[in-house]
Length: 465
Image 1: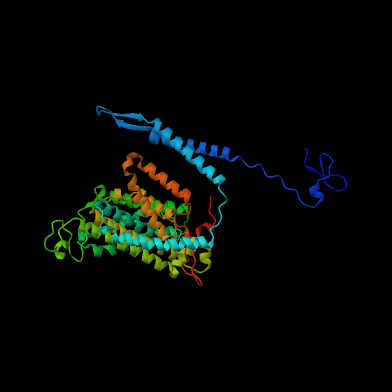
Image 2: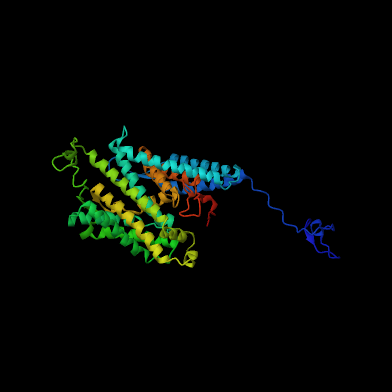
């Protein structure tokens, strides 16, 4: 075959047509010619077609077939929606094609410069005080309704849960899919202590956190040797075990009916009764009785708990314990070689993260005045973990922004009814494609020699399996 070097008499390689091989004569080894680059359009079309086929297989049973009640109410019949399926598949094909073409035509991504990283750090320093000031002033802003306050309470609850899980996942690098179990332990601890023993919220709050931390240690002991997917499976099972126990231990937890009549918190002994009266908040301060007073108090209560979680986390990051968490996240073998007690490091991460989950659970119970196992399903753990991952592992500001977008933005899709989850999932995919390392990928070292400079997460190799 022409162009292939073969041995020849005299020791000089020749081609099969008798011509001396120039590469061997000059001493430069020949390498095989690189294959021609695949046409970007053909590759993009093929990949988009595969994505469309996968979407077709998923959405035929989810969207194309729907059961409705018959006109007489005597039975169910299947209603088909093939037009909706075709629109969704077409959107998937167009979106995947546009993404592939953008990836192939855009210039090669370069690592961010030190100037860009420093600029992002300065922007973060400005965004955090603005968000804090807005959160503090929200109840007094014009146009703030009861709905906005309730939504703010919900967002701050998930911010607190995200910061608590960020200790386990973002700092210690331990994947936890059962974080909702500690949320449930805190909620049921307060519900049982307040309804059966008669303890007030301010006494039950630290007790709920301590009980949740105790269960975090119990979870940590069996998983000391597990990491990655195996750890995720065990923590997922732990969360399901707690939920099943809450359903079946009817004599203690009330079973599926839950616990109702949970006492509301008071403000230094002043109750928030809607009718006012002696000993009430409105009577003491000479205000007109209003149910909004209790909502505003709950809003500032969860804001204070969330800020406490953030402050403790930032303080711990600068302590030897926090640096041990980050060392464990980067390399467990090197962590052991440095003489760090890996067992205590893991257990403290689980315990402290669970403690803040217990605090949030106690607040959830007193806000709702009712708890049931339906509030602590796996989807709650998935949402909290998504907040941490999309916000940026280890980033406090990123977690807060992700909670604001995922929980607050989720309400923007409420009018879409059954398409709500689809639009919400598409928005999450856009965020993951746009910022694969999270919304805030820069990291400020916990301790450094000299001036601390933010380090971009893009400088770390990204694994792809």
